[in-house]
Image (cartoon, rainbow, N blue to C red; front, top):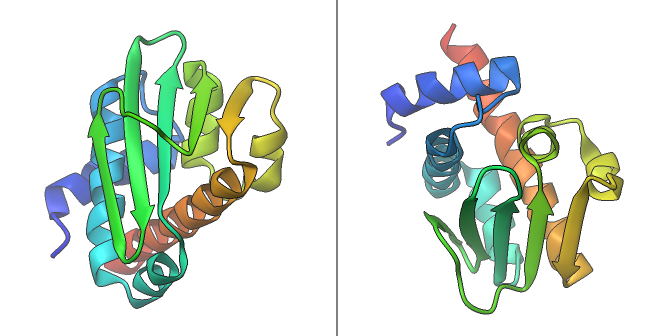
Amino acid sequence: MIDEKILIAVEEILKKHTFKETSENILILNEVIKQFSAEDGELKKELEGIKKIHGQFVLLDGDFKWWVKLGDSNYNYAEGKSDNPSFTMHAAWKAMNDFITVKDYGVAALMNTDIKFDGDPQDIVSFAEFHWLAIKKIEDSIKKKK
């Protein structure tokens, strides 16, 4: 079941398209994605079709790192450094914020020169497509509750 308190916090993040430069909000957003991934049929199906992807995210101006693992029907995340990611994304707060919160940012986000990627390009694209689908599902759910 989706935690309503967390969903309200995510609503504010997505409405303003900003994390307010607090790492806690990144973890909150990932928690809602994890919860939606376990309950939403379309997201579950997407996760079943994704090979295991392991992404490391590094904020260059915030001294914060987190990782995400998805695929084979699971979505998991945690704060910190992870061993052997299939891709790593390095960005300052603004570029990372745009990538993570703007659902229609699309391929342009992957081309943003303010975002640096290392690793498997297909994993980066697969992660981005899943992430933006999850953001859309979350926003749709928030709208339905109003």
